[in-house]
Image (tube, rainbow, N blue to C red; front, side):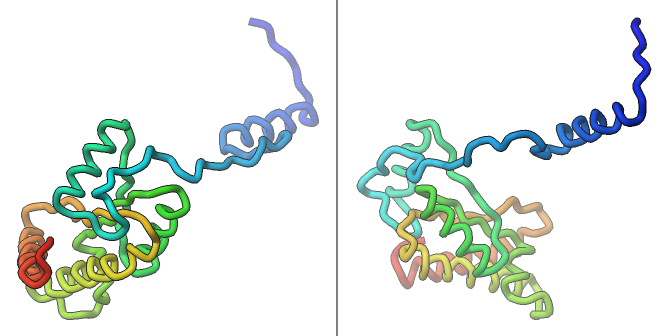
Amino acid sequence: ARRTNLSLSQLGPMLFSATALVSGLNVGPRAGTITMQTKTVTPLPASVKPGVVTGEALWDLLQHAKENKYAIPAVNVVSSCSISSCLEAAAKYGGPMIVQFSRGGGQFIAGKTADNADDAACIAGSVAGALHVRQVAELYGVPVILHTDHCQRSWLPWFDGLMDANEKYFKANGEP
């Protein structure tokens, strides 16, 4: 093996360049601006309208994604701000979007000091978030799927509470 003796003045810039390369710093000429297409998918099925998608329209949307080989992004939300951010991104880049609620996110929406006996705050926050999405999603012009995050066995009372709320909503509105 050949050894080269480098002075500290020669080694310094090399270390900086290696560090910049590893950490992702751009120390050379800048690449062009990165942009995304405005619309990232083929036109959606006629049954899929802006707002919360359910029933046959949901099946049509999922089949469309499968046939056109794209994924629908899902984001766990914890506030109306994070909900709005998801909807803004979907509108900007040609949605659809899955807005996803977790047990902890639901509690955060309700307020961390709200009474959470029997998961009451977790349930109320998740339901409030879902109702918020129903009210504003159409304003962004994108189809939205409401979804829950994973649920371990000990959290089933939260999920049961969501199912109860969904049944009440269905009875009053004729859709989940």
